[in-house]
Image (tube, rainbow, N blue to C red; front, side, top):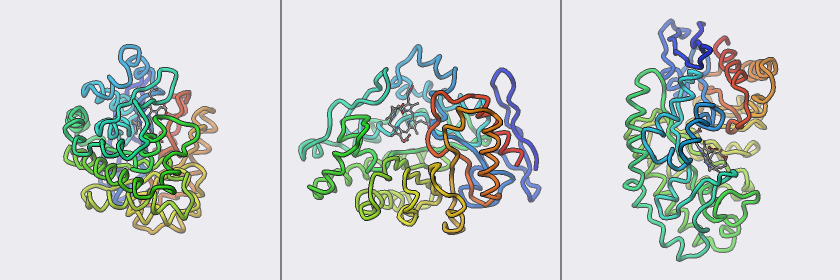
Length: 365
Ligand code: CP3
């Protein structure tokens, strides 16, 4: 199996095509697309959650000039931030630089990024009147900036690199919307779920519609796959997951049909895999606490597995990164449908040399 991407000292990467076990040439885009369809590849494709932004000096330089929201809402800048990690590391896929909170924003609940960290929404959703005012039909017209950025990206990435679209799950969005932003302790959505199921369902119906509108637009713009972030799915007990989160994700997946593969990342669901599979996910994204050996034996062969290096490993050394990356590769043993990723987003203090080492280790596997 051949090598792929050379990273020079200036940090730019040139993807080099490599061959598959069948001798056919695979581009990075094809490697990612094949893995999504559980077709064997030469080595697992790799991308990282939160690869766009945070860790890169070139992103930090842009943040000196522009606010987070300016980056998200200006198509040229959003496209540039999306491309930065691909240029530097030659990832198999680019994830669109945006945020899950653009959907609530388009529905009438604005937000901003606190410079000291975290997200703050203009207000918190707390009553029937607040829910009634949300406007899922505004999602598409409002998110014209995402539409433009995706058009730019699809043409820049061409056949070389895959493009991943995404949205938050209705449950995860509802938590941010009801807390009014980042929180150490999400509880308002759970309280609503138990005390006023009717209003909870009304909120979820609107979010499901808004998310479907947004994802349909991304599919029309040519994304190769979609990831649904149910980052707060693990807050729910196994008895509640289906009613509070799983069934709404399943409705989204049914609504979108089979046009593109769907990755469902439900953090903290390591003991409740069946519930995630029941959403209809084509690929399940797992956090670093998941036991991959167990998963490989339990997840049906036609479903992909994405994960699951502990993000903290990228704070250590290349030696430790290589060892831990190899451990995952050995466990997965070239299982078709394995997409290499972290178990959650890149930590801002991650070392670039460790990311490079991780990618080289995968490509030499
Ligand atoms: O993966 C990528 O790089 C693509 C872009 C992306 C961002 N946010 C950009 C971002 C994606 C896919 C997201 C998803 C997202 N946003 C989630 C789900 C994934 C997860 O990690 O659980 C959530 C919960 C959010 C909401 C959000 N956005 C919060 C709570 C915060 C502030 C806290 C934090 O983590 O920094 C953000 C800000 C944010 N979104 C940044 C970026 C690059 C940081 C901005 C900065 O530091 O410059």
